[in-house]
Structure formats: C-alpha cells, structure tokens
Length: 151
Image (cartoon, rainbow, N blue to C red; front, side, top):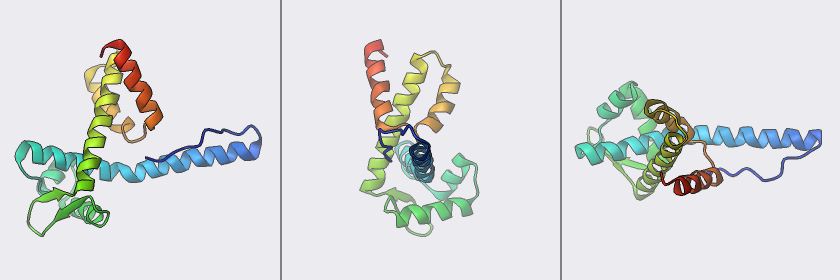
C-alpha cells in the first residue's frame, strides 16, 4: 500500500507538494485496483467453482474476453497469476496473499459501514471502492471501532 507523509505544509509550496503527494497516492491506488479485483475474483471462483476461467471473469466483470486476456497478461508479468492457453487460471503465492489482503480489507470496510448504519446494498457497493483506497492507518481505526462496538 502507498504511504502519504504525515506533514501537510502551511505555506503555499508545501501545500502544493502535499496535494501532489495525495494525488500520487490516489493514482497508485487506482493502478492496483484492477489487479486487486482480479486476484480477489480468481480466488473466489476457485473457492466456489474449483477453477477460474477467462470466460468466468469476463462474465463476472461484464467485460470482453479480450479485456480479460489483456489484464491476465499483465497479472502474469506482475507475478500474481499463472496460466496456459485454454486452461484455468491460478494464483501465485503473491497473488493468493494479495487476494486474502483485499478480501480482509473489503470485509473490514463493509462491516464498518454497516456498523455506522449504512444499508447492506450500499455498504457492499461502497466497500468495493473504498477498499482500494483506505490506508492502513484508517483500516486500523475501523478495526478499533468495530471491536469497541462489538460488530
């Protein structure tokens, strides 16, 4: 996960630098979103169906097979997925670790949103976006809140 420094400057230059740092943080989080969504979906498909195939990913994400193949090639290069033509997809150890981390972040965000009164459907939708951008510090605060509230 990308880190943002603690200091937010008071003068104009430091303030601009701090803003740039925030936007850099968000850009990097956006770059990881697709990888995180795909490894999480692959893990879910393997757990529920015994395998993950390109056709399954295309159906679940509502995208074309060509789009999935392009993303799988990227995930292959990044070391998250292994596959052979016309065969099922498999997560590497790194891919499995990322999938577990994403699932856990999603669950914490979802439970937090439910604990503060957000309806279930909205909490699922919002957690899907927030999970990619929530910092470890904020996630820890969510966990503390959930523990205190007994949720």
